[in-house]
Length: 323
Image 1 (cartoon, rainbow, N blue to C red):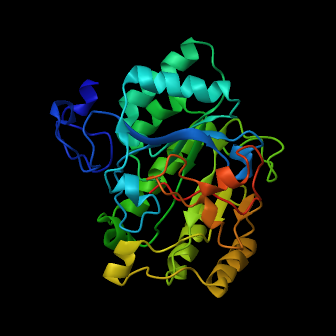
Image 2 (tube, rainbow, N blue to C red):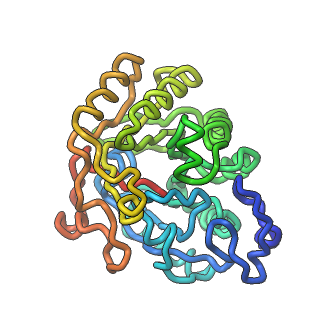
């Protein structure tokens, strides 16, 4: 836990002494906070399968995007402090419920806790896959440590436009940092396998990249897709999401203050096909609102309750972005 002192866990390199109670750029001290732990049925089918993905949502975020769909926990104060033993008990409870994997959502700024948890779980003989579900904005030098424990990387690639990145999360370096981190993730674990877009076979290992189309910024998405195609080729597994919904800060700023239009998303899908991507989840119906979270509730995802918590939702129900 000494790594929380003079913290350099994320690309911000803020140097906060989180071990003494200071908060870093991520908004968190060394006291691990989570907002929700439970089977999640709103991920891509290759992760949710039929029994759900064992999601643990961590509070805070190093990206701090103002439009975050999980803003209650990434930017707000929802959540509770847990100990290392609490985390272990939560994870083993999820495993007992039969989830297909453990899904660590926004994990990088609490990596010392997660690394400790992962090693304890492996020492106890648990073999289900671990998912590193992140913003893509990871310190490239940390990827090797992640890859020692994480079987699956599911990063976002939000911005290819440095100016848009700066406007949304105050770091124009996002495209370069994320591309380098993604290179290392792919080098460590390869592309997602097995690939099954209807969820009959759940993924065991590899990388899938998510991208959320932003309203009015289709050109940013075009640049992201071309960058990914040029760097990694058409076999790179993708999830291209249309589910953006403006939060209050979007309305206040007058930026990203509407949803994505069908025409915008259609242009994106046309480019996906033109570039020849072969393993892609698309979201033509803009996702289902039941899988946008309200972390003020005991069950943040209404879709879980409406579906009895055990039936896999349709494939267009991708999960909210991870900040």
